[in-house]
Image 1 (spheres, rainbow, N blue to C red):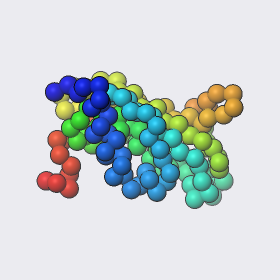
Image 2 (cartoon, rainbow, N blue to C red):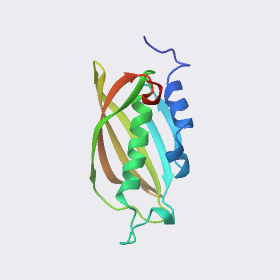
Image 3 (cartoon, one colour):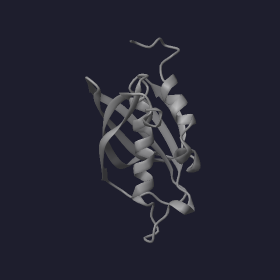
Image 4 (cartoon, rainbow, N blue to C red):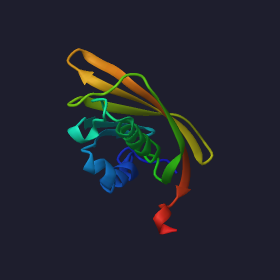
Length: 145
């Protein structure tokens, strides 16, 4: 069933409101539309590894959060079936990051989404990573089965 304009993203917004992991890291959901979402995060001291750069797991988590919101924007509960990430450049303490998720295709109960994670600078954006997520619609939350 198609969602009306006022319903678009409602499921994703509700899911994000219950996302303790993203909330603990200060991730903000700044945009959500049908099949797309944008999330932002600042790199804190706790996210920096032994090489004095952002730990890749936190960058993956930001991308995964944007992916989750994009694939849940359609309404039914949708989870990750798999994902991969390519790191292009490192993040640093204090960086402001943006993750932009876009739906590529939905077929049956599955979907493919691409997420670009960038560092925001005064002169534009620098790509840090490219993420591809595969989704699967399950209809209800796993803890409600």
